[in-house]
Image (tube, rainbow over all chains, first blue to last red; front, side, top):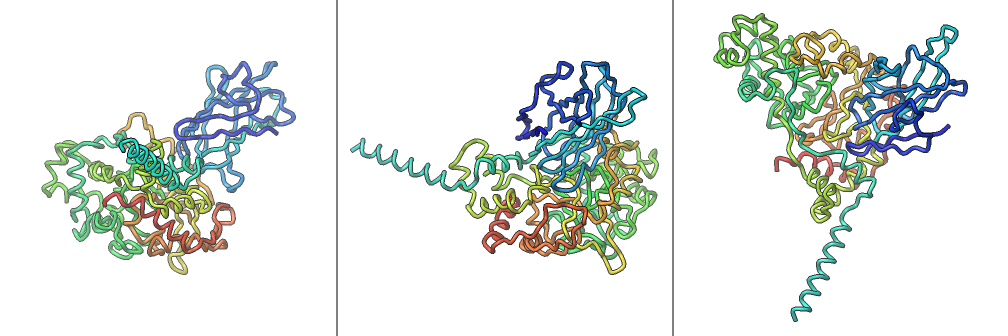
Length: 139
Length: 379
C-alpha cells in the first residue's frame, strides 16, 4: 500500500507523494486514494488543509475507463494512533460533473489521519461499496 | 591603528553572531512548529452573527453592563464578580461562586473569539449565547427574560439600548435578552491578550532575526521544546491561541460529589442542541449562517462524557487555579498532574497520547518558564 502524506506548514499545504499523477478526470493537484483490491475504478482527492482545527473541503473524483456512476458516498477520517475520529460528520453534495464535494472535514490534532471513502455505484447489481483510503499527515 | 580597530570590530561582531546563534536551542523542525503558534494577536474580525460586533457604542454599553450588578436579579453580582480583570478575567477560586458554589472553575473571558465553542462543556457556539447562560441560570445571576427587560427599561441604559437596537418598548423580552447579550459580546470581543516574549521570539524566528530571538531565555526555549516535543502538550494546545478548541479527557476526576457527575462535553452537547441561540438559529444576524456548519455537523459521541474544552494558554498564568474543577492550584501543579498522570482515570477509548512524562525538576521549571512567557504581555 502506498502512503501519501500531506504536510501542512503555516498557510500552505505541500503534498509529498510518490503515487501516480491524477487521472484525466481529476485536476493535477488531486492525489489518488489507495483502492481496495476489487476496485473497478479509481478515486482522487483534491483539497487544501490550511491548518489544524480549521474546517476544510475535499473534492472527490471517481475515474474509470468504463461507464461508472457513483450514486452516493460515505466519508470519514480517523486518527489510528490516537484511537479517535473526527468530531464532526462530513456532508457531501454531488457536483455537476458527477463527482462529489465534501464539507465539514476537520482534523483537530496534528499527526497521521486516515481518510476513508466508501463509494456506492448506481448499478443495482452492486450493493457493496468500493473502499478507498488515504493517509494524511497534518501538522 | 584604524585597520586594527576594524579587524577587532569585525571579530567581535562574528563572536556576537556566534553567541547569538548558539542561544537558539530549537531545531529547524521545532522552529517550524513554534511558528504555528502565531502570529498574535489575531486580526480583529466582525462577528457576522452579532449586528453590534465592533460597534463602539455597543462595546461601551457592554463594558458598563459587564461591571453592573443590574444583570443579576437580586443586584448582588455582575459578570465582573467572577470574571475579574485583576485575576485574568477569572476569579482565583477553585470553583465559581454564584448564589452557591458552582460545579466548575470560572473560565477566563480573554481571547473568546479564538474559541469555536464556549464554556468548559461547549454549550454555546458564540459569545452572545454564552453571555445569556449566566444571566438566566438560577444559581448564577438568576434573571428571567421579563425581569431583565424590566431592569434595563428602568435603568439609565435604556437610551443606549434604544440607540443601538431600537425602542426597548417594542421588543419582546427574549429579544431584549439577546440584544443585551450581544452588547456584552461586543465588549468581550475586545478582551484580547497582547504580544508576549514568546511572540517576540516567534516573530524573530520568522524574520530570521537571530539576535532578537536569542533574547528569549534558554529556560523558556527548553520549556518550549518540551511543550512541542516529549510533553505532547501541543497535540491539544495548538495554534496561535494554544488550543485546538475541542474537548479532551485530561485525567481530571469528573465526580462533583460521590453521587454527582459532571458530564462535561456530553452535557454541553445536549445544551447546545436544545439552544435557540446558536449560529444556526433565528437570533443569528448572519444571513449566510456562516459559522453554523459546526453546530449542524458536530457529533454526539459517548466519548464526550467527562471531557472538557482545551483552554487557551495565553494569559493563563494570571488565571489560576486550573482545570475544569479548579483542582490544580498553579502551573507547577498542572505540570505535576500531567507528569504523573493516572492512566486508570483516562477513558478506555480516549486519547492514546497522555502518559506519565518522568520530567526532571529542571524540566518542570523550564515548562513553567515557557508557560509564563505566554502571559507577560502586561509587563
